[in-house]
Image 1 (tube, rainbow, N blue to C red):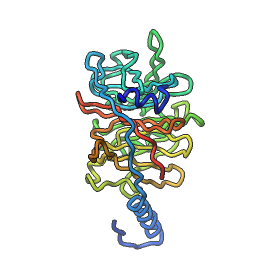
Image 2 (cartoon, helix red, strand yellow):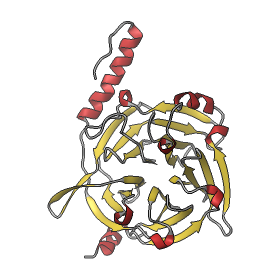
Image 3 (tube, helix red, strand yellow):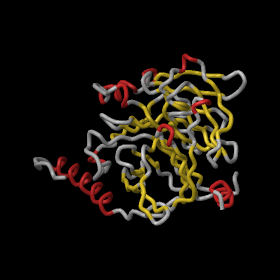
Image 4 (cartoon, rainbow, N blue to C red):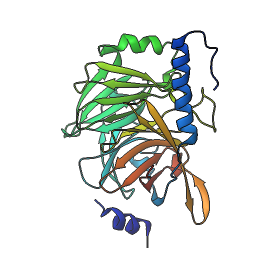
Length: 309
């Protein structure tokens, strides 16, 4: 059976402790240690591959895929590309659909993408540190919201002193039930920003550091990055993908706990890895997990069963 038919049949196309000096420091160290223990001993359920497709299309400006989100149009995902400012509909079978060229003022360093119930799409511009609110109509309607304009940004700015331009906002997703928007800062430092539905306030700033359980055997703490995220409506967890460590962090924002899934799978009897993961999306209705990679001509859309913990 061909990979396209296989997918359609499946989805119907559609630490150490620090020196303890006070009771407060002891409590802090204990919480950090428990987070590490949970990560280190979490059951890694592994990934079951359903299909994968080549997706790079230079002629359509989709040669450096980044970001992934389910579209309200059944059978399609939203994505963007670093190559040029554009918003792309990508079929769940890997076939590129409509592309919407964005005005040059949108910039070319587009990263994360998130669909909203009203049909608008949120796109991250990394170097400009802004969120683009895009209405994919003809003509395109676009509003730019700098992160610096949000109430509460001054608290984030204190943490982002020295943050490199290429380590800025990288992933974005939306909780459709509350409208809250989640943005991850890629690294140095790794942060989760929780924004109000109106995109006017930063409601919460959460460090996603080693003490919070974000660690890897593959890379050091300074190199560990966050490249995309998706919201699980059923569990109310965030699924955060890391390019450098080639793993998914499943993060509970309420309990501040985390588990991890290695981006490895078996194909033709061989153990393989997902290289350069940049986007992640969940279709919980069909039980499918999508991972988009940025690997030049080898860029792919992977489709897995959503693993169970």
